[in-house]
Image (tube, rainbow, N blue to C red; front, side):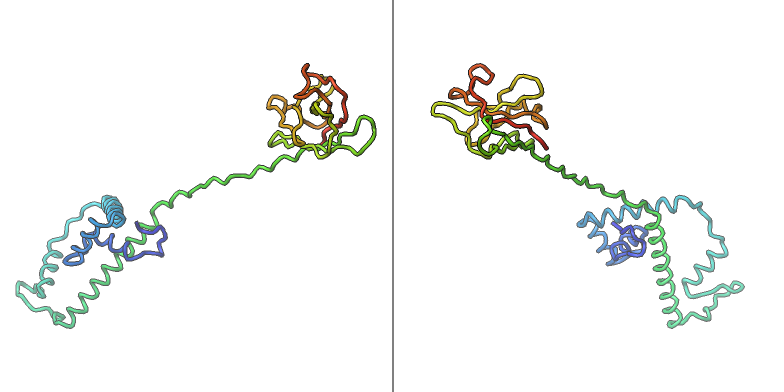
Length: 248
């Protein structure tokens, strides 16, 4: 297809426009028609120019050639002029002048074609811009942190971090758990009853999906020592060995 830039008219644009206007003949026309059959892009360009030229020429009314002008044209094609009914060879009808005249006509036709192509390209609507959606990265939420202080006041606080993306609580300190018992993690929101988050295994607990909404700043995490597998009642039954509020 022809370029949308009126200053960038390539050979394909001119060839398609010449074929659409019927300016090609002989081998040039045969080659162009063969290209139409073999090159879909070139065929589309020819069809585009034919449609544009048809619209351009449809706007003008047919004008009949005056008889006197028609007679002079016919006489000039034969290298003759009519002068009072006598056939006289034109004064400038010699091979050298004829060659220059043919070159001038060809140059004029080429200039007209270039002008028409340029005007049609300039009038063609600009293509719609292609809009490519750009994904906007979403910043990951910072984890909630807590320092679980030992209930007896002895020893260093136990670090805990809750990952709001994965719903996992990681415990960064060791909890002394007697044999045959389990350490269970609890969440206490305000004055509500403790909710079990699960039995600690390898220093981590995966918070149930239904309880993740309670994991917010000021929620208290607590660790209790329960029978193996966790509290049988749904509430802490053994001693609470550490507790602290989430923050972040």
